[in-house]
Image 1 (cartoon, rainbow, N blue to C red):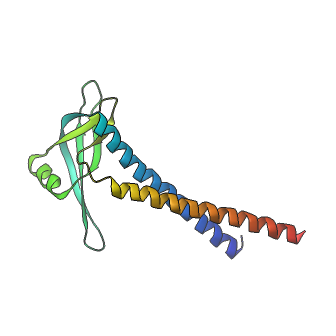
Image 2 (cartoon, rainbow, N blue to C red):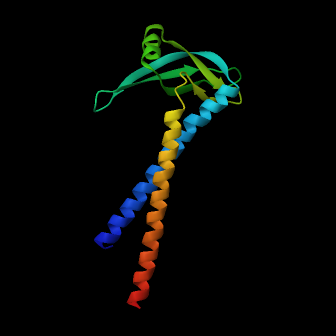
Image 3 (cartoon, rainbow, N blue to C red):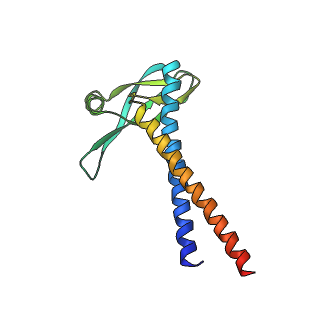
Length: 151
């Protein structure tokens, strides 16, 4: 594969992959909020682990690992992103309130974050995906044109 073709494929794969990833991540968060806003039960969960991700520019994103046992279901252990105050309380008490969907207790949250940033991620992901697909179409046309010219 020549260098130009390799670069084009690398760019296309990156754009499409990033676009799909952002859309899926954002959609999962928005979907979870919509489902739990309509119908959710609560249960007390036990904090089994925790950590804080530190960004390169100093931001911090706390995460806790919670085990909870909805009635009639196997115990579930999940990672949850939380805000700083929930993180501190969870470390002190080792307990949190889990909001879960009774039809599928794996759909759950501890803290309801603002939806707008996740909607923006969906839009940005869609734009990046669209750009990747446009690049793919352009690449396919130019490849087809160059094959016709060689014959």
